[in-house]
Image (cartoon, rainbow, N blue to C red; front, side, top):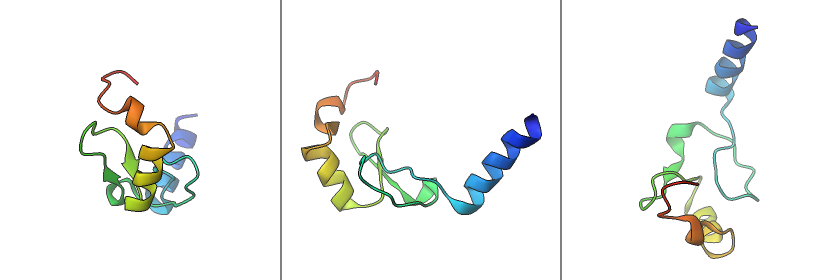
Length: 69
């Protein structure tokens, strides 16, 4: 069981994952490559376009700054 869990982490580290908080985004990459929202430090985005979409229509504007999501 534990080896399966580590295989998942290894695969994610090698191949990347979808970390962008914009629901419509399909960009896959490594966590370090996604920029963090400067205000809440929780949401991550692949780029400025996704951040803008999530802020204006995705609901991040209402959630940002709230300590408990």
